[in-house]
Length: 420
Image (cartoon, rainbow, N blue to C red; front, side, top):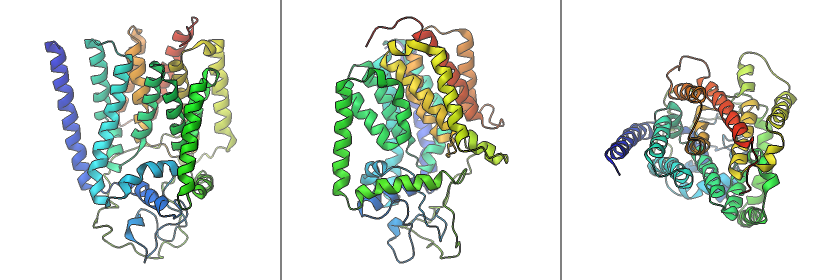
């Protein structure tokens, strides 16, 4: 390691520790309002309660109470899948106050793991690769989106790590592992299936075996849990209800004065407290709804269909010759576009999804046009907040990144690609 690389590493560690100190303060001061509903959901799954339609009421154990749910509501705030609740169940064993710091450290570990997987899979061991990884780490840690993710106690960094793992698995030719990770991703959120669609022409028996084996194993686990299988039926019912609550972050209540939550829950008095950090809902449908324009339910899907047609025209048959990693990047662009169009809450902390795709692109594209790099700098400035006074600056950054990714895919897939 030369002097420049050593200085870069020292600088990256300093930034990491500084960011961690900020997030440690946010974690200890505020209540982790989004982590609370996920932990309550995990506890409910383990004890046979409905994750979605059985909110806490006076007289029940405090470990199931989420004071961000309006009194008198018929639904909880939990919107994850039962599989997500299963993954979070080990944390649910701890008192809520005791699990905040472990989850803070886990979020940082997953972010670093995502970058490490990309570095080991795609990076030549040179100063330029080190600079790319350090730059991406700085980009995410310097953004309010990351600090919002940590302060709220969100879980999107788990999904981001799985996506980064998929890129790494394909790069290393580990198709069985890729099948496992693909199944895990869809079990976390069924909409991730869109991300995997471009890979269908290249699915191997090993991928199918890994995915099918994972689904069977998870199904057996849920069959053993009280109300485990029923929870998936309720998930579909709950998502149907939430799809009609455009822009709302909590379930409606017909009787807001039904009861009053205790001042102290699990020894905590700050479960409602959250940092007044500015954030956006990056869903186009939700933005239009806020402006008084309600689009028909079919319109986002029609717009997505037109997007797919444009992709087919842009890339054509070269899709059939592309590498798995390029197809995964294409799927990520398709999924991101769909999420931007659908009437679902899509807040800044979901930006962490980009860590794997960006690492893959920047580590494997050594020569890029000046205009491409200039647009990337603009997107980075929007992410960090240099133009935070602009409306929906994160959405604008993501739209720039989508254009850059699609342009790069077109360049990469133009010649015939060897099969990997």
